[in-house]
Image 1 (tube, rainbow, N blue to C red):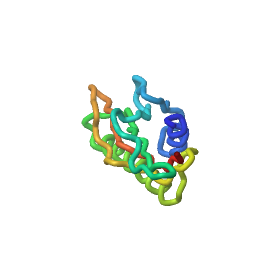
Image 2 (cartoon, rainbow, N blue to C red; image 1 turned 120 degrees about the vertical axis):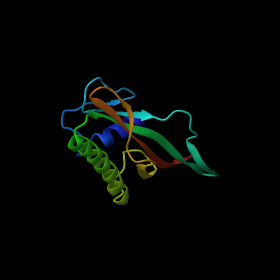
Image 3 (tube, rainbow, N blue to C red; image 1 turned 60 degrees about the horizontal axis):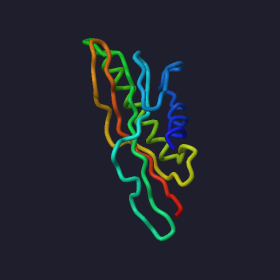
Image 4 (cartoon, rainbow, N blue to C red; image 1 turned 90 degrees about the vertical axis):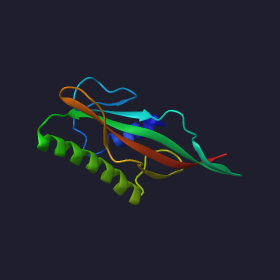
Length: 135
């Protein structure tokens, strides 16, 4: 499932053209991204006789330049806002990853700074994917 989510996120027009989009790994350079499955959650939201509503919880991490320059940090926030809006628009238009039964994708949080170093920060957005799984 994470492979299909990665392929879907890679189509986001706000990601830098030649930046890396990894899975469970954020390279040691700025303008890199990673999709990470959340630990310890129950994928089954609601069981039914014929299947279940399920969820896939993940984070979208982006490593960006970070410093005292206000405009740089505003640009970082704008990137994160654009990413969230892209997911919301796709959700409204029913544009989903190529996974059977998907009916919703979105974010649980705004972007927040997860970690920093002298001149870079990792911004994290908690995301979800909801789908029906026949049983």
